[in-house]
Amino acid sequence: MKIMRKIGFFSLLLVAVQFAQNAGATPVSGAPYHDCRDMFDAGSGPAAADCRVYKDTSDLLMNACQISNQDFATGISFFSTGMSEGVSVSPASIESDSIRRHVDPVFWTAVGSPVQSVEFPFADAADGGEQSVLLWFAGDRKTISGQRYVVRRQCLHAGRFTYTDTGASSIRIAWHNWSMGF
Amino acid sequence: MKTKREAGFVVLLLVATLFAQKARAIPAGGVLDASHSETFIIEDGFATVESKVYSYTPGEYVYTYQISNDSAVGLSFFSVGIEDGANAFDPQHDPGTGVAPANWDTVGSPVQSVGALFTSPIYNGFSSEVLWFASNYASALGEGALFGTSSGVPKFATGDVFTPLPEPATIFVLGLGGALVALTRKRPFA
Image (cartoon, rainbow over all chains, first blue to last red; front, side, top):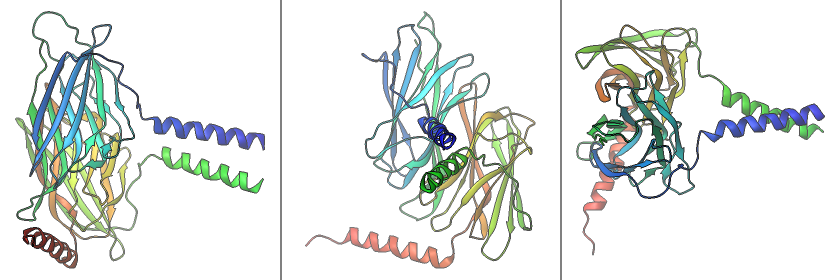
């Protein structure tokens, strides 16, 4: 009986850990160091990535992005941020919230060793009128003189979209030139 | 006592489900219906996606995909578009057949695509594991997408892969629905 209770507790703990998904608040506050809105052509309408870069107390750069989809024929299923060569990516996470129509990615992940990108796949696509939760990660490029980049390019993937005029459907990948130099 | 034991069993089952690796070979007994090899031009090289369709009892199909990379781009993402009115379920990857995905799952409800993410990219000269899913719909050539990053720059390509085809009746109903919506929108207000 006691063992059963322990197993149950342990199982619940594992479930909780599994669902935690690295979600947490961004460890920054104050004014952003860099602020921009990138527009993407999601297929038959626009999607935007609002990105902000913060400096934390150790001068690491905290990159936070939120995707807004205004294309009502397209579901966005994937977001990627290309990394400059040699950048080390440390904590990456999502800031979950309970706001309706804010979509969580399945998980975030740094891809490659050395890291070539940070990618966020979504199990439920961000449909028209929906936003992602805040996606963020820290890069190790410190604020020293000269031209340095953490983020090189960003890319949105629409799993499938439908042309409203013809009814035909297709996969869409859109990317945006964006470099954060300092 | 019995209720608690049952509750414990349910919790254990939930844990087992959560941790179940979606890694197994395709079911035995399938008959190869069709195969197609598609070249995706990426950067200065190319990648190949081999897609195959196996049929089982009527109305049961398995779709398989294997990516081979001959480009300088580290491939990290693969997606298959699923048409409205078709379905895709039970996504799995065959262990030991190549680079394993960190995630291979359906997107959206109803499913709009099935996507694979590789934490360790598929580099030049390597192939992915065989990725597969089940469907109740027979095949047609549809669209697939490959994505990777080279020196911080995204590189991608689309090409033909086998994908479930919705039945003509389903397409007709969907088309009728779309036409009705269009007519309703165009009708002026009184």
